[in-house]
Amino acid sequence: MSVETGEGGPAAPAPAQPEEEGGSKTVRNTAIAAGGAGCLLFPLGLAGGTVIVIVFCGFGVLLAPLIAIYLLFHSIFGGGGGGGDIPGPSDASSVLAVFQGDGHGDLDTSTVPEDLVDPIQKAGQLCSAIGPIVIASQIEKASGFNASLVGPDGRQGISQLPPDVFTKYGKDDDDNGKTSALDAKDSIMAQGRYICAMADEAQKMIDANEATGSVLDLALAGYDVGIDAVRAAKGVPKTAEAQGYVAAVRAQFAKYAGVAAIPSGTPTPTGIQTSLPTAVPTESLTPTPTP
Image 1 (cartoon, rainbow, N blue to C red):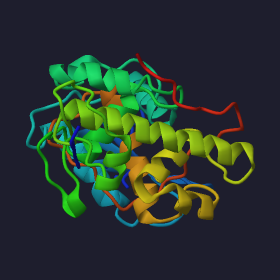
Image 2: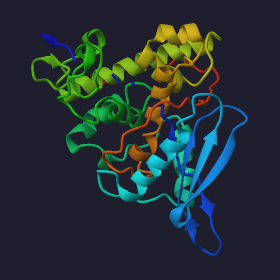
Image 3: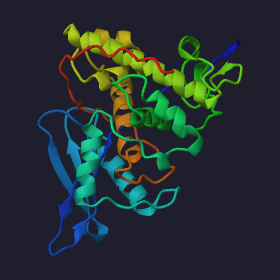
């Protein structure tokens, strides 16, 4: 069988926070969660009674105001991809919960191409730490669902895995007689095996008190910058690349969970560091084989 090579990679566009203005009128709002302790909320009034709530915490958040305004106008005017409903108070609360959650839950199948529903679902069932919402969110970050994308450093296909990673985890999952990163199913299943392997390593580090953080965040960081970097940092490395990737993937959870409509074509901003949920040691999360 031939193997053709074929990433996954802050944005922390966080969910909208509810604000109300007199009577029964709900104020439009959006939020950027930059994480950290001692956060300060700065509501900024804009034309038309619009409010942006920006959470300033820690470092690396100088771009937060611009990003918040950018996201707001994309939400209102549909930035290049058509409109989207602006979240109301209950939606905002749900979006925030999903952003901070573990990425589990049912995938909203209407948010991904019909022919990719099955491989995304299967990749999200390879281990208990990773669900299909995480898989879809990673694909959004990696390629925007472009199965023919040719990226830097030999990366190819919908999941943009480094060639050596795809060689290790790729299989002929679509049964077409070849293993290729340009075959969407092969690429997505390899992605699932890789992120599950990272989750298993993350769980081992947590159990050995070698790292702090949630299994999901450590796994995402390991997927992007390498598990050795996570081990050396004893958690998600405090770099724009690592923190940014984790936050950018999390920013897509609400979309693929069907909690909030995100206008198509809206890019994920980068450059904001985010404080991330933590977890306590639990049993190892070794990937489970699929039929």
